[in-house]
Amino acid sequence: QVQLVESGGGLVQTGGSLRLSCAASGRTFSTYVMGWFRQAPGKEREFVAVVNPSGGSTYYANSVKGRFTISRDNAKNTASLQMDSLRPEDTAVYYCAADRALVAITTYMRPHYWGQGTQVTVSS
Image 1 (tube, one colour):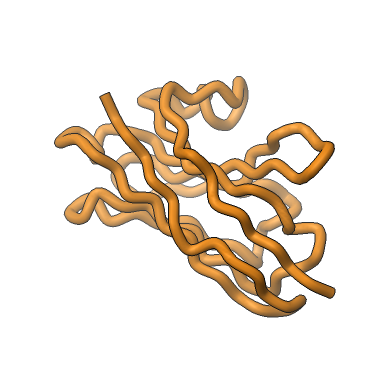
Image 2 (cartoon, one colour):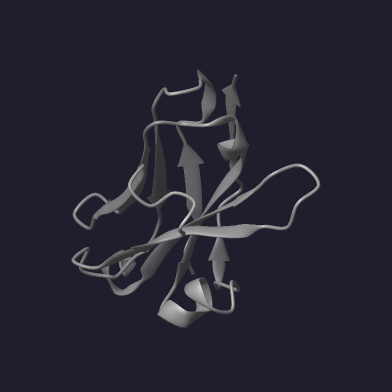
């Protein structure tokens, strides 16, 4: 069982930055693929970024590539999403997710574990 708790959301102006954190429970964090999703009002949840268990490989949605950076610290059981050059269209609830299978996050978008979400609002 893995429990995920996000933090770091808030209100920021266009062009600003935010850093989201995801704290995970359990002693097997380093065996999970970690990802971030987001859901804007009236839209479906979409994939944002993913990092492999070692932290050595990452993958991003085209809409955030070059602006967002995903990372993890296995010693601290945390995953992070650094968001720079934020735009109004980045406004959404952001969710942390975990699964042992990469495709569960990147392809099927059905990871085994979800966080409760944190609101990010970018004002124009």
